[in-house]
Image 1 (cartoon, rainbow, N blue to C red):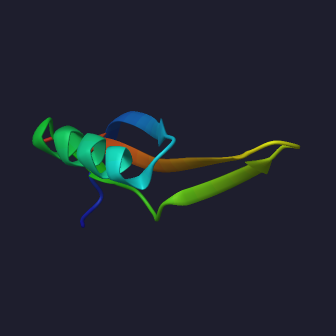
Image 2: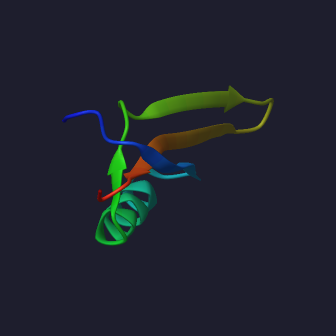
Length: 63
């Protein structure tokens, strides 16, 4: 990709990878592109384990 200007940057975060995939696909339809790979954070408490999946996305200037 040539030197296009980033005009917007967002981070999507979901508790399931399936919901993250759906949201990423929706944002792609809005003109965003993934930036880098998926990030996974695991928080294990005494009674349960919480997973958080995240994806950075950018929108480039069309000019």
